[in-house]
Length: 333
Image 1: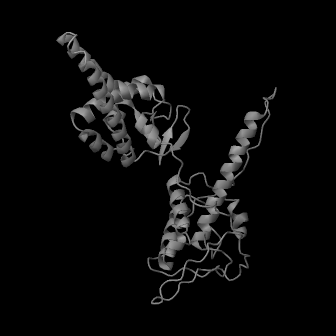
Image 2 (image 1 turned 90 degrees about the vertical axis):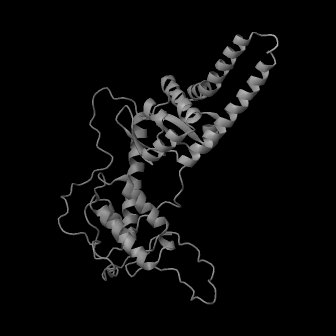
Image 3 (image 1 turned 90 degrees about the horizontal axis):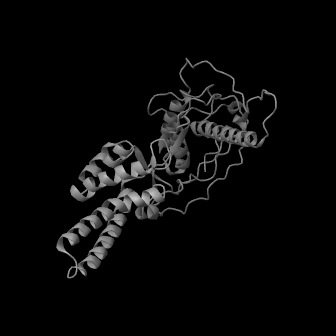
């Protein structure tokens, strides 16, 4: 994933195309170009007995330039950044600000591709893609473009449900400083929670919760396990995003008032001072998880629990699925 800043100063998250998918799209385009070039050469060769030799040479050169350079330029200009290979792999070329590719950019990419792929066998494109943070080849650097993937993102399972015992605390959270990278890491950790050993579950959860606590305030109540803390933060973040989008959609459909009317914001967050004391999840390596708070009679949340796995071989003791903690928190499904 990568952040793209549009011309209106809006940050948009896009999926940068990976090197294997770009290589597969390139092979499809090269195959189409070679077949087209050989077919055109066969037709021109049939006129060799009736046309002048200089004229045939000029036709061969024009066909070569038209197929090798004109093919990507024409296709990407008419289809807004998609050649036949990119169309098959779900890729698209866009500008660095997320706008559609223009003819000038497609021309730069086509001329650079002639040098990168047909003259130097793709070596400069490979080296540049491995060095660039966004996988850009030389044509993308010169043209100011980026290749993105339009295929749907990987689904992380059912949405995270807010633990009821943390709903009131989560409503007071300050989430404006939470980076997207930490939120994605926490989401992936909760998705793979049952695949980890108990020691890794707590150690990784405490580490991610500690990183998140540096950007989220106030701290959680005592005795909250790391997975419950991360679940509550992500669920509250998703709820606020949906509320903001619904408010913007309603504001766009509402007729403009004749006089300025002060509208309250969709959600107010109380400011919190930076935390000075260490977060409760900051602890030494190898330490055991802290016991849940004994005075928290929390009812278990309505979160789906995955079906038990098949029994292992007789040589190993059967593993039991972890149940709710004494604080009433159910592990993520």
